[in-house]
Image (tube, rainbow, N blue to C red; front, top):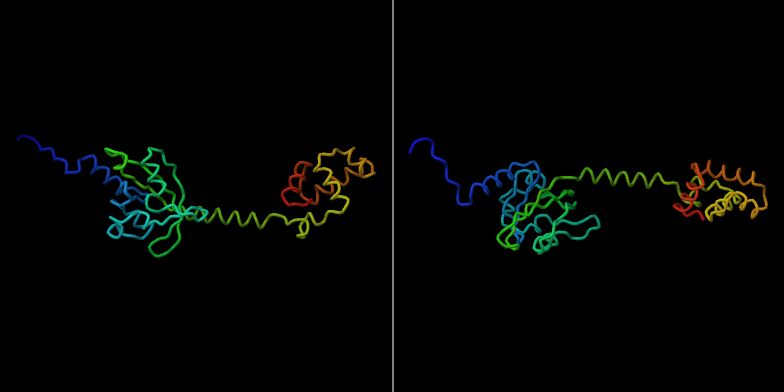
Length: 225
């Protein structure tokens, strides 16, 4: 036979081999799972992220390896999980974040995307889990929330700026919250409109706001009234 002979594809077919090679070399962690939840492929990035070798996880149920939970602590990984149910029903699966632990027990957050490779029947589909470590992002987010909570001025009895309001200024703020304008507040408090405007400006200065709307929002947010 003249020329080079074209190599024949293996028993799994050339396209399947190419897909396996692509998944093996991708930078994201890859866990390929059967429709029954058994792991059939685990790439090097997955080993690096979670610490398990391919030999340790191939053939095991993915729920045993990941044991994932959501932000509220609810289980995401269990036999016949929601992902498997959605695949069998032909539904698209949105990417999601999942808390889990490495082999050494270190907590990590993973962002997981699911790619479904259809089989001859829905119950024979293959699920490709692509995941990456997003622990740092979650830690930064938690730190920002903590700092924002600490930075919020305390309520009326907490010694913050609002604690400096006089009784009259609190009355003005209460009327302001009820939607009263300057003339209405002056009439109800039996003072001049100029006095009301002075009280309003003092409230602005003490609460570090710049409008009546901001003052009302501050009062509502911090339970001043």
